[in-house]
Image (cartoon, rainbow, N blue to C red):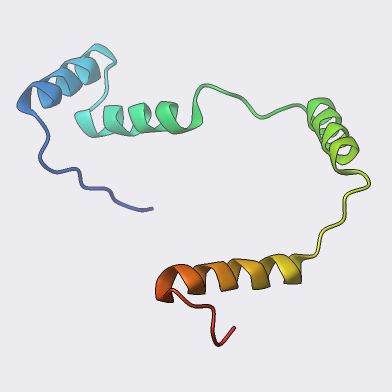
Length: 92
């Protein structure tokens, strides 16, 4: 499991974190993890199989008839990046 260090926090914010943690019966570290989880994942639950199938079908309908050329897209991306970095697309 990864670790995360947060530096230079305002003392008032740390105090609020500790109060919130105590109110929820958790350590400040556990409360911090929960706050991050909620902020990044939300309280959403995994979609049901039926919902996932419905969303997949909608995406397939939206993309139907479109063609994709991954190699050409990659070449263009590299050319564009080289031009940004060097001002020239020589060597591409």
